[in-house]
Image (cartoon, rainbow over all chains, first blue to last red; front, side):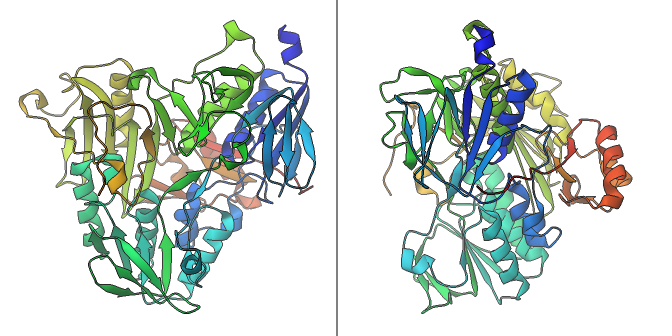
Length: 451
Length: 69
């Protein structure tokens, strides 16, 4: 009954990148029914990556990053209203203003929020920030404009590193604390994390690894931190960059398979209920989702990637308005980028799904390279530093299950003669930043260690 | 008008930097920084940049003008 699927009531919960692109795609597919988009922020969809880059560098104001539409989704926008529950039996989205929205199909795209500092009183000190929303970035940009004597960044993941980079570019003193052995190690493994650490130090960052922040100091205004090694660092601004939390709490009573790693769904973006049975009318896309990928052992992937939000939203929209045999799988390879300390870092595949790496092109010394990651003799990921044009080639190797070390032609020298080095991906539980790609399935060769 | 660049797709060819230098700029060797809000007098240049982008990573369009309920 494809005609029926093109009509009816669709509600999209989440008014950011995934929600917007899904809504556009629904209309592009020919959906003519009613479309309602609910967002807890009062703003129309805006782009978040510039918030830790252009906005902090002063290139663009925080309120200027509104996302352009591909086409008008002709939707009813319900903004500044939070969804508080999903009644899957009665097919209604419950809202915090007491109203509810009936649906025939619903798309969940509620994304993530910044993980707050665990002590609420310390987190409330003036001068303590997280960076996720437009308001967060505006507040931090203003604090940087005021010329603080030192900025302290907790967490050496991508967001923390980009913020530290922006601070140095503005000439501000900055300290980065990371519980793991180096920045970015959770996402990129040991070798590239050493390059990241060297870049930070070369650019004047006071990088402290293997330590945690035990206390934020200050009466009403933030004045510094105490570290687990007994040292104290004085600073005027604190940025908490401890990763993201999935916005799934509102689904607690829904009976869906929602948890800290996200809402599990099948490759067609259909949500699972708590019994692992796939639903017919609840779809998921973007950072809040957790989906199986055949190239990575069918483990469920949790991604925090701009590109995944777009492609998964497109697949979800397609599958919401097409009957079973015409549905498409979401098989896109995880891909992300980060610019920091003058370097352009891009990744394809899942670097943490690896046991060995080789540098296929360039070198660490040149600060320009392509690193290939392998798992049990197969190429599973590649990361380029200032070598983005090579990335598509390695994408092809990953998609075709090419052998690792990669074959001749994949490198600018005879790497088959080199001995691959261990990829040295740590257990995520020892880091204060999370990888932006998380394998959330069962890894028989990885034992959880409590530290 | 607003612009967004799919930096997953961008490979740093920098055609946009030549065509609309007031909106797009390189940051380092191949990282792209751009101003998402396009001033009226730059719209035509950004349109040309979007057309010229070898990997078609640039989107120019209107922002959603939805108000809160």
